[in-house]
Image (tube, rainbow, N blue to C red; front, top):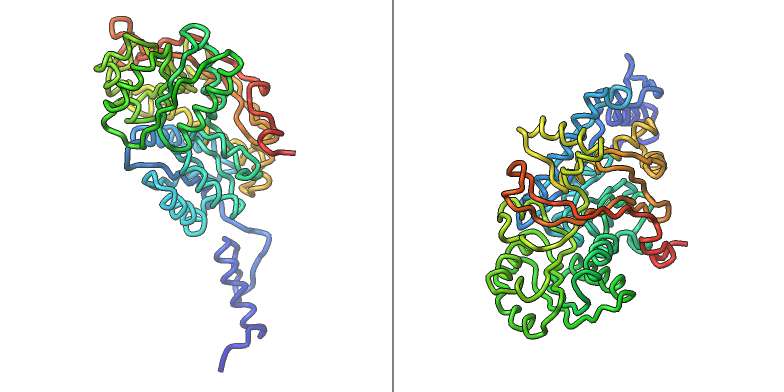
Length: 418
């Protein structure tokens, strides 16, 4: 005979199971004390889906090291009312569907309270879709304009990273007046590249730039030689290379081999630390680009000095890269908000995170109210010759710092927010 689900004994068993699942206390005789929900041993779990395989692995490892430092510092400071933080790292394989699978597992199986991560604009949109459906906070550390738009955004969506409009705009304002207005784009054919080009064109239009061509290549391109004859024939003043990771390093190296540097100025929205470290100064020489963080800020920004010292101490003397900074502040931000709210409830932590105005590692930052975009400074840099370097990790000269305000962002109305 089937058990009666409404029988008092059945109700008691279900109550005990529910209490055990939520960390409640079961009293002698089967009673439940409802006032105690979770033991202090119940960690604050932060899921970190990142591409630990594929062309962005160096950036992903940097994100992981930064995130680990944030957790270490949070726990060393006593956590949240004795609850410690735990980092759950998963490989999204730079694949949107894989990222969704891992994210859902983190939330539903591992009971992650928050998700931070992604190093690809396409992947982060898939992660964001999974988290917002489940009302879990997601703090993205990858460049994207789309994630801030109302159609993709939710109150649980935060964007820690600079976005392409901010990044390309800052580099454009620095470079086009200095190097010329006849422009060719060499663009990775996915969201990151497309959005960077749009950012350059938006700012460049007001400066009167002439776009001669937008030449697109697939992600993971290893031979750029077929693109260079057309670029040389167009005779641009500026070649804007809008790609990332190994694509960037390979295209820079081959552009130098083909003599493009002698014929035009090469700029990029972002100069990737890991690529510059691996490939050396000659590949990156004379190229202007942007970055959200460079450890050399420690000479003028006290929080950068504190972050650098802590990161070096935790990582065998290695300096943090821009993506290490993003992993650090992406996790530290949500943990600081949880502590401020004294809760892991998504709605309460979202409200607390919106209110945070901090200086965690690069100067003051805050989230814009309408879209949760992190408003922050942008650095314009160029590769530093080895003869000028203090050490092997002294790789960039900071040419300028653009301090952002909301007037330089896409408007809330443009993004579709009321």
